[in-house]
Image (tube, rainbow over all chains, first blue to last red; front, side, top):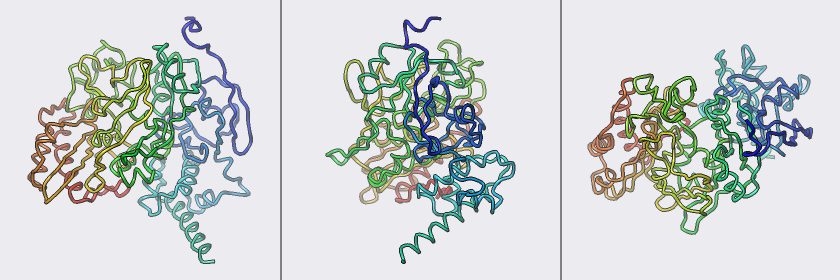
Length: 174
Length: 338
């Protein structure tokens, strides 16, 4: 079927994204999801494809600092955005405090949901809406863990939240 | 996903023009529902009009103390806006009862109104569905219908509207601002979504080429007596089996004004204006709450597997009215129901 007479042509579209601090320019088909862009051409395979339908949270990344399911974002619609993936949070030698806390608390079993859990938890800290444990659990409800490591995940987040709260109290006192 | 052409609209009139001229085009905002449906090939637009650059993201004060919420304001931005929390806490609470933080960050206000049903048959192109494929039949009638409608259904469709936010907007009598080829106009919230009738393929009353630009909240805020009570199969990240947005104005232990909207029970957020009016002047007590619940569920009809929703809705309405009357709304993080 010739769609060109009725609709704009099926063509690629220029897209510029800042990914883990690096500006990248692409020419993308509009049906490419952010998740497929990250895992495919960019080989940033830390971000995981779980359900691919916004039901599990394994693909969670930060878009302009806000956590989102990268499987439901068409990359073209994010032109100009800053994307942070698990690879941008820290490295094995220089881990983000949340990555350290997940290690220390054994907050995973198979590890498949972990990058999404950590990205989500880092956003939770910045949002500042969750303080108590039940609020952490609710704010992490968009990240499923089929191994059921929820108790240790909440422990890890609680520790980082507690450390941050203690640091801000110290700062205020100084 | 079927392939499609893609354009970015720079102005509202660009978007309207592009949409009006192409019946196979769809508007893309947050994409949390549309992209999902495109992956399942339930929706197969030939063209996508991306409206994310339109200046519709703000939440503005209105001179009368109300708020105008831009269609592109994210669900999170609305739920955590200090003015919304203070003036319309029922709306904030209902939004936080829905989806997950990730989805609420991406999902927009206009998109929330326009999201499609989560009926299993609608989502499965291998089955009949009058909403997806008019005239093909309804797989849910006589099929797996545990999550389906008990009010306002037709012989062609028993799907429910999935939104939590819209249940609060219905109770608050919001106004939907729309722009189309014939200019701008307002749609009262109760007239925005429709019952399935003979045309379940139409979820709402928008005309060809019309887009939602804002949602307006005016009048009574019901900040003292309100609640959003949502009952579902798991405690978070699940659609409502039954939800209740209840709000009331109380004086001398009597109801001055009553608002009750129900979610998860019909093709649209369910309100019965006549029934609400009948209870003005009645005592604020358990007997009245039970009478209200029974009155609101007059005509409720189960489909077999969802028969349980009728007594569940009755109990949920009574609980919600108790919470609203006592000024202790449901906490969406503490899941215990008072």
